[in-house]
Image (cartoon, rainbow, N blue to C red; front, side):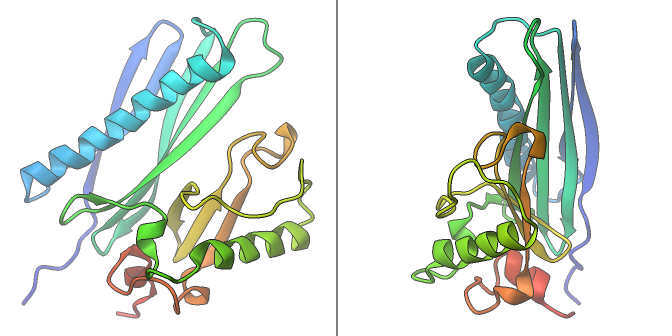
Length: 207
């Protein structure tokens, strides 16, 4: 009998420095130590990248407050999809800035997926997904800064609740007060173009 694809164990790590508290996940207990180390390194690198982006985007070398958190979005069928969020407030700025980035892994082999990796080659996934996003913008009456035309080929995403969730950063397509716009698209609406043994294909399986 094959080994069932159980959820992986997640340990919460924390880095605390003056005015800064950053929580981030680390995977533990995987059978393959190299895969575990690779996944954990990518998580740490992304966490560090968000910190660096805060300094760069806000043009400061000092923050009054910085808080990093994470959410596990999918942890089943050898698919781990998670998001890291970093909020930082610089002295005398009107408001803080929140950044979010995500990672989606195959926990068996340690592979990290880009958006393109989820779809069959030649599937025109950018146009397909852009149509879904435009439809939701219209239906949900989301205010847009400039006319939305298309997602990026490497658009930010995570997988949650049998959906592909595309999202944009603050100011990217919407005013600040909208927050981080998220666009969930059911995997069942994408079955024609997803890679069947990829993360989305596994979410679409009935068993």
